[in-house]
Length: 466
Image: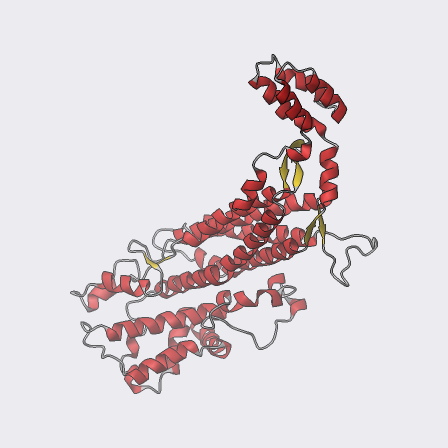
């Protein structure tokens, strides 16, 4: 569950039929977890959190004697401003912005008005935004938004998919399946092993997302503490501000221009896109397995697959997941390519792009939800899997020629190629070939007893290890 600290539940849905994006229309109810994090309300809420935390940090520092420490009552009131911040408050900030045409300054004015009755706080109210550029507030807020979105929504969604895949891997660890390299019959595997392959890739990608250390800066207009040192030239602002950023669970970046360079944001978005790409690959494979009949899908009462063909049970969850992950990656990759680039010490091209972080997360979460739902509907069809294997005895050409090679039979590959390539082979024809081989009798017997469903190597063991 998303922390209540960030969570916003709108009083009423947006007019879905008029929404420009399906994230705020058709899929409005499916993305409630993200709305309080990545909406403009969520951004304003985090700005308020950072501004109040900065004021409290300044007041708590004994060396800054001009800013007296706050009483417990004032500290509690400041904390309550953050904890009780709602969409009515963010609407008031937007009203002020209509005049200022500056979003962070509007939030600062709203905050001063909000606590204007508290004489103790108002005595030092000019320190609310002390020595800050807007980007000190914004970059810290964006990092906090990403941290919560990743840790409380995205990673749990990926974990649920991984658990579904792990369950399929273990359940079908020993269920033989014909591989199809280049779409053609190939050495058998097991259905569980193929699910384990996906799970293992996704676990690695998920851990890559989790490892990204999100950075933030709090060092003034161009990153040099110019204003800080103008006011208190002998104070160690760098260490003070480092501790401030680290108090949010973020990594402090000491080398920046006016903006934090967004490199770790790009790292996160790239990591998300890699995970999404793995799931797109899985969606396409599972779609094919359903098409081949290896998987059936559980029926849902009242659901319709086609407006004209009543028999159809379409793999819509995997199709929806593929489409949403593709949209997410288009946005995420633009983020990772654009955000680390800024002209000289600052340009504003990152600002409008960052307002779309929710779109990248939104389509990723929609894709993950569809994938999880689709995986939950899958039922293997062992008879269909067995029928495919039994029709492809030519896949045993590989073990036969490999054993021939072991015992020094000449041209083993070429002999099996002549026997099988492009024409298939029956069980009887293969047995006849094996019976004539100049290899130890025990090996002829072992090869003669082999069936395609047995030729799966360590697939079952690997499937259980994921």
